[in-house]
Image (cartoon, rainbow, N blue to C red; front, side, top):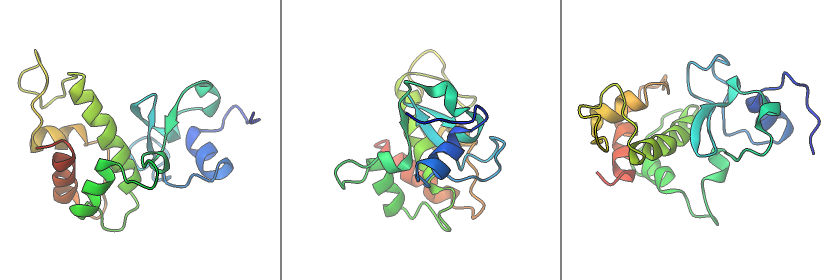
Length: 154
């Protein structure tokens, strides 16, 4: 049981109290995506969530994606496609990509979805639109899109 100040963000809890430093504090305003984690399987900006509201909720960080020393397929794809340069945004990019693929599988359309009546067809434009909340200052976007496409089986 943790005792927290009610103003503690999930990001601060993860980084400062639990030692899980994968999620990064970029803007601390929910605009850059560096702190993206999965909350009950859905992507969320950890800097915007109050930790006390998440009792009983399953939070997955970049540290929790690998299983038994085996990288998650998205992590492997990022390595294979050099989907990072400085690496600061990479944990948020990967968590966001994992959540985004789940959204596609669930049939959730995006602004770029041409046909909103069925499962969205994932292509480079759709990936870029869905990942637009995650900023890479280094500009590794072509490699990030390629990594996500590979992990999606495209």
